[in-house]
Each structure stands twice: as structure tokens, then as C-alpha cells.
Image (cartoon, rainbow, N blue to C red; front, side, top):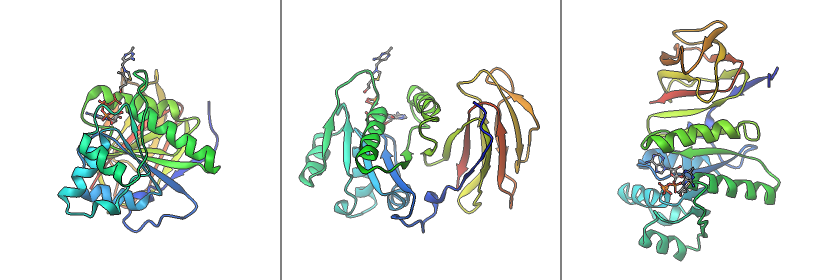
Length: 251
Ligand SMILES: Nc1ncnc2c1ncn2[C@@H]1O[C@H](COP(=O)(O)OP(=O)(O)OP(=O)(O)O)[C@@H](O)[C@H]1O
Ligand SMILES: Cc1ncc(C[n+]2csc(CCO)c2C)c(N)n1
């Protein structure tokens, strides 16, 4: 579907000073991926509701311990999954802090999907829509990485505001239409990509990039804009006829 309006993206959750409790509610889903204390603290403080996907609880527990943080100051609202990855000591620790540890044994949905379902339930109960940040999911196992890309692509119509953040990248799906992406060069590195994944092809126009495109076809089987660069001092504008993945390097 062609959207006529422009979406403006301001990834304020990467800024240290973002205050929770503002109009936008954010949910954080911590996936089972290597994780540094620094990124965890930043995203934790920028978000209002926190959930660990199964072994994501181990990663959080271990990152906090390594950083010398007080574990009791970072208590998730939920741990959910098939629970084949969470360590018994981590499960017992969070249960002792009254964290709900919810087992969904389905082998036809990933733990990421089970956590998104939990956000949907929260939204129904509160009558609020959350913006979602996945911590992890765009690196590591290729099947999981492609799953993240596919799942966010499929979610795009019901959920515009969902981002995946790793140590190296932030990425999300730009649905068909026009997009303005606010760039804070203190947070973002220079390298970015426009990835035509899950579509036959798209017509792309851009500004604010080192290598811009003008009504240019992009497809997995043809042109893929990788290793593109942000231009200092400029925001990015993108017009696409089909949904694409946008990724940009983090500093
Ligand atoms: N190696 C990995 N690379 C990328 N993402 C991962 C990786 N491992 C886990 N994840 C993400 O973290 C979530 C929770 O992982 P979990 O601890 O359950 O591992 P898993 O059993 O391999 O995952 P799943 O049960 O969802 O297939 C997964 O649903 C996935 O989104
Ligand atoms: C065609 C097909 N491929 C893979 C799986 C396996 N699978 C998909 S999600 C999931 C849960 C992981 O916690 C598992 C085991 C399946 N069911 N159907």
C-alpha cells in the first residue's frame, strides 16, 4: 500500500537523557545475545516496561553482575519463553524478586514472538500502544537474524514503532512511503544500509546520504545499498515504494 504521509523518526531512546513517563511509552525486550552493561543501562533507563526473552535473562543478569551494578535495581516486569535457555540460578533469583516467569512451550513460535504477544496483552490491558525496542536480534545466528528481519517486516502494518538495537547497529523497517530520519551524529556512526529484504524490488529515492538514489530500483537480486554513509549535519530522507530495512551503525 502506498502511504502519502511522511513518517519522522527520532530515535530518542538512544539518548542518555531520555526521560520515561513522557507521551511515548517504550517496551524493552532483551533477547539472548551478548550484551554490554553500557547499552543495557541506556535502553533500560529509556524504557518503561522490561521483558526478557528466555535466555535474555541470563544475559541481563550477567551483564549487570559484570558491570558491578545492583541487580535489584534492574528487575524485569516479565521473563517469557519456552524456558529452555534460562539458567536455574537466574530463574530462581528473579522468582525470588516476584518477577513472573511465564513458560510458553510452543515449538511453533520463537521466544521473541512470545514476548511481542506479551506486549500486545499489556497494551490491551492498559489501552496504550508501546513503542518496542529489541535488544539484540540482528547479529549472531543467521536464522535468528533473518527471523528478526522477517518478523518486523510482517509486523509493520500493525506496529510501526519497533526497533532492533545491537552493540553495532540500530535498524528497523521503513514501510512504503516517505520517511525523515533525524540524525544525531554523536550517537550514530557514519555507515548505513538500505536493505530490500522480503520484497521483489522497490523504487528508492534518498537525500542526506553520501550515495543517494533517485527513483532507483533496489532488489536483493540487484542493487542493495550497503556501506552507504550519512552526511554530517544532514538528516536523511527516504522514499520507497515497498518496505525496506534501514540500518545505521552506532557509535
Ligand atoms: N544466537 C542468536 N542470534 C540472534 N538472536 C538470538 C540468538 N539466540 C537467541 N536470539 C534471540 O533471543 C530470543 C530468546 O532466545 P532463547 O534464549 O530462547 O534462545 P533459543 O532457544 O535459541 O531461541 P528460540 O527458542 O526463540 O528459538 C530468541 O527468540 C531470538 O529472538
Ligand atoms: C517448519 C518449522 N521449522 C522449524 C520449527 C521449529 N521451531 C520454530 S519456532 C521454535 C521455538 C523455539 O523456541 C521451534 C523449535 C517448526 N516448528 N516448524
